[in-house]
Length: 608
Image (cartoon, rainbow, N blue to C red):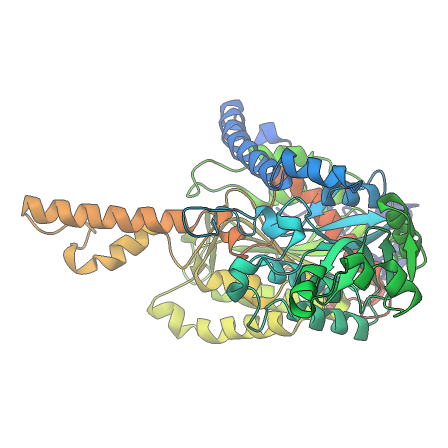
């Protein structure tokens, strides 16, 4: 049952209920402010203690695995290579990132697991490239979110492996979409030459990094570069288009290093002689300033970031303080059942994401397989679109139910209208996916699902407001596309360790593959024991292969998701993304709540 419209209005810092507004001012208050209502309930009211324990233990195992894999990525090539960097009087890339960020700022990585599980090399010698040899992340610097790109100098001297250019370009794209500063910590010896054929050519090859530099500059996005060491070939090009370029005394930028020049021109010369700070600060003017060492360079970059435009997020909060949910976000680790076929209440998830567990749900009476609405994250408004799990009422057949986690006609129309309204109002959208796909069958086709789905795809393809996608569990079929999956270019796509991306589940695909060998109950039809065993093994092999393909780390390794995070990390990561979406000012539509299109949508559908 929905609470009454006057239950709780978001009136800003001085009031939290309609009781402070006179009866004659009620309509004006509703138009000017957002009617946020309590959502969710204490965990003990909907989960038994044994369920909490079982869910928590299952998720704890998943999170431990996530933390172990993160530690492996962060270690680079190990302590031996860290010692080599320190012996040169330099910091590692991770040390630079930590020194650069504000003391209380978390680090929110992008693309941690790219190349995870992939081995390179030949002739019996194989190598791995943790994180594709580069760190890309959100950090806060001088109270501004920035995207930092730092070559990992413990992995082949920060060289570019297959997928390294694409990882850098993805981070640049995020900076461009949000119009927040991009900071390069450059320490790169160019392409990893044994694998050059997989990272040099192609539309998104290494050269595309410099095209992104130019596009960022064209859009007026601040770019600041610190050059800390070997910057050869592409590594030398990367910082040049930046608005500010600092070089340490150990740094050099060259098209070709000393070794190559010695061979080609028989000259005895060092790389510092060719392209060190003496050359590029005082002669070529390719760099702006020389600094003695890594700490001095990082402090200079901090000063430059401080001189960029201030964050606009506080203005958009409208004086409302950020607040934790009434139901702690740490409880998200216990809400998801171990079996992905078992459902949970997505409204309880929302209650542990939004400030004070207050939420404005729109059009609740139609398309009940979907939840759409608005809540605050860290004091800032965001729109939410989420799949409902479990049985939902079937509007076409009164008294009957249909499975949730599927897109039906009403739900598609509902989220299309909500997505368009959020875009019109400039509200960032967070998509919480747990979807098995579109409805199928004769009735679905007669209802025009293809047309409704195309409308949704058009809407999401043309939205200008920042959209962020979270794969909570299932991301299946065309439903994954329609709900702003990565092919529809959300600013960022996050996944949990539970996420499963596929056209269809392994068991379903095995049945489809061997359909002619099965009866109407999907049992193996033959009575021949040998043939039956062959079919059984074949179906099992198909199912196992698809299950392996759905592993979230495989998806992250090949850039099908941007980052894997634990459920309890979702709120703080979303808080970063939403604040970053409000940081830049004047580059996109941002309407105040008084004139939101959402108010019109709410009035026109009230009580429907």
